[in-house]
Image (tube, rainbow, N blue to C red; front, side):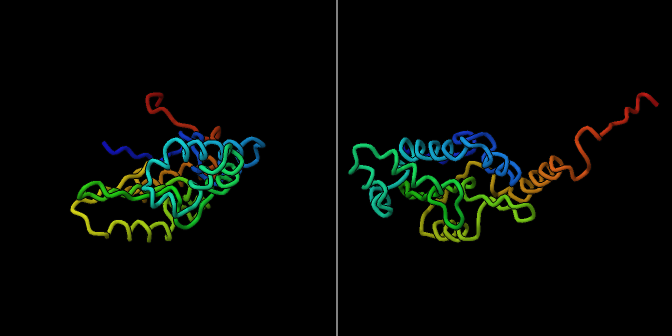
Length: 184
């Protein structure tokens, strides 16, 4: 039985890359970068390399380099340093052929754009890769993601509203009052 996985925020850190405000707050923490590197390295070692074919593993060179070392911890930490802040095509998305079906697993976390007014779950370069993978010949196409990316406009608006609310667009949360019609 083929098994595949893509991480979401809870495998790395709760609400990872949910908003620019959250990123700014976490990037100010002295432990945060090391935390992200360790989470991504653990994911790469324990799951992601199993998502890829031997040919795909050989393409990047990292797998062979890790195998040549007695201790690849520093190498993985260095390589994962920027993997949580990706733009363009993500190293975490992958595609597999499963018999007559094609599975395209989409990273909608590490490559996420959270700049206010320019939020995107998937960058244009990543979408081009998805499109290329999805149009290869297969009898069945399976798309997988850790978030409901096909509902992205609604999800985007909900996250943008939440971000605006917490940024004080309508005052501080304590300024809200709800009238109780039963008192009238």
